[in-house]
Length: 259
Ligand SMILES: [Mg+2]
Image (cartoon, rainbow, N blue to C red; front, side, top):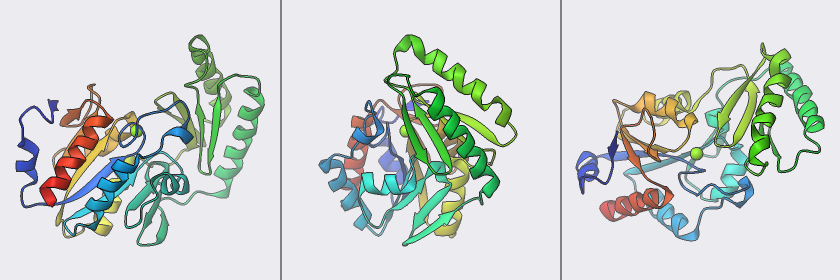
């Protein structure tokens, strides 16, 4: 894994004369991770840069996140962007909503059962934030006492056991998600989006993300695009940037390059 800014101007050479399809994760990539998901807002200066980039005919932007799609749209608040919520299960493009997989009512029923169980079980647990994202139910434990975090995870694992056939767990940064046993991840979403919107392959994919859930997308794009992981760790991405600040710096460099 290489540091993207190690050789100055390297990636600009890679992007030279290319149109780009920029995939940006939200939390931990475009915005710093905050104590609660509601606090992680895009700064005005980041919005300005994105607005500039959207206008360019040689740039397309997709913001892809584990957040629920309407929440994501509200948090970013920009038009002419492609949004992919719930890890790409829901996609919003050209004023249309698309759902990548059909979720049967049976799944919703099972999800509802577990939601109620979790609500009951953690009623008195301090610091838990529950987030209902329709097809996914998230439990954020960042604010739970460090010593209790392991216990919380164990409790969830036990609760889900009888549901293993229909539901699965996904782990993110201080969050556990419960979702239907369907094959959906950011890698699949990226493939579908590129096929639908970039079928002539005019646009060169650039993907930036920070979490485990971004690894599927890194794998998909490893040989066909520029993949950048935020934070230095074991990853499938080719490059890394240290933090959100450097992601914004990268966006600024793109802005200046495409001006
Ligand atoms: Mg993230």
